[in-house]
Length: 243
Image (cartoon, rainbow, N blue to C red; front, side):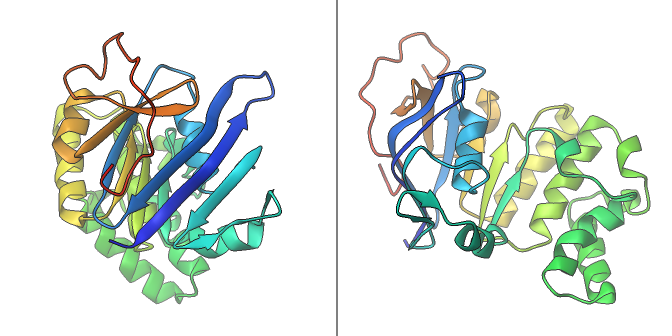
């Protein structure tokens, strides 16, 4: 399978000195579905932001679709901008993703920026909202939605752009059991490679074949049985591509 995302010896520490990535090697190829868990504040969301070029790494490189997005150890914003529409990131807080007056405006925003006409963008938005089973929310005011509704609309704003891979940050937050099941069905059906950051053990187990714990800046492979356990003292290895 072709390589979509690769982190090469990537290191990043927060201003307070907290290590989020330490010489991290990682790759996501077509067909991969990888889950990442870990303690609160360990850097899981930060890792997704590093992949998207929303934060500059201290050292190392990010390759997207085979092309380096760092030049002389500096983030190349033009390169990242070129590939961001091909990788869909759903933020942990949907309020960070929904900023337009209505749901249809939020979902149209991406296609309009891709160059689609207003009519085309609206058609695409209505289609994806219907596909996700939330067509009744089309004209609703975004900020008045429930937490679960916002999360599904945020996913719609990403899927409408037809990405080639998904990055999902705690996608089951605020979802009741019915909407969680709906989300599972949606993600099964879309058949995209994805990285899922989640504490939801059952959700992870139904979607992915590889699970890792982010610990002290390293991704440590762990079994479904002990992923929440205290014994995490396994050797960190390169992740993805059948690792």
